[in-house]
Length: 247
Image 1 (cartoon, one colour):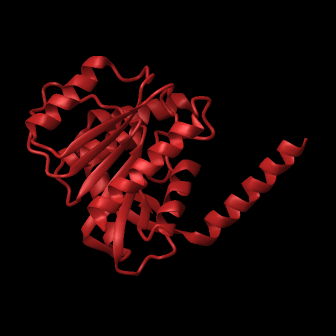
Image 2: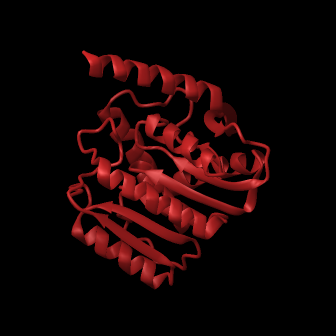
């Protein structure tokens, strides 16, 4: 009973916090309306971090990350990849729409690029911008690097690592941090090996940190995969990486 009451209080307080500190930003991709969120320090000349959410779109994990990043002195912008009217309501619809962007990586890179423009318009220093992403967004972080978008570095957090083998390995200028759960059943060993080869071929500044006893969505408190110890370590590694490349 007490735990239930505390959970309700926490939910109400975090919902209030989100409404107070994250501002809706409307933008377009042609006729498609997009709706992202930006932190309340928008307008200041600060380093910027673009957050790419997981496969169901903007969620509490992305919102919490934005608020934490604001506390650390970054302007954070949460991208809307799918657009209004296209937000998945269940795993099946999420898999379908995320699968579309994984296949059409150019469309994914374009949506990321449009969100980056909004981050710059929010005051972020264009010379000091990074991308972090969760799950599907982690795949997007790698696509931001592959697409040579104007960023300093990327963090892929339990992201998909696979790339169509028909795509050539190209130079990678963005610094890359991959935070990989050791027991992620969605990542094949050959995908992991190919990513390492791709980053080496691209002469990237890269690192992969693997977290023990961790399944796919180990950083999300709402997931049955959540591993609080490893999630905290992963966030600390993210903060260290961002501090190094942006400050």
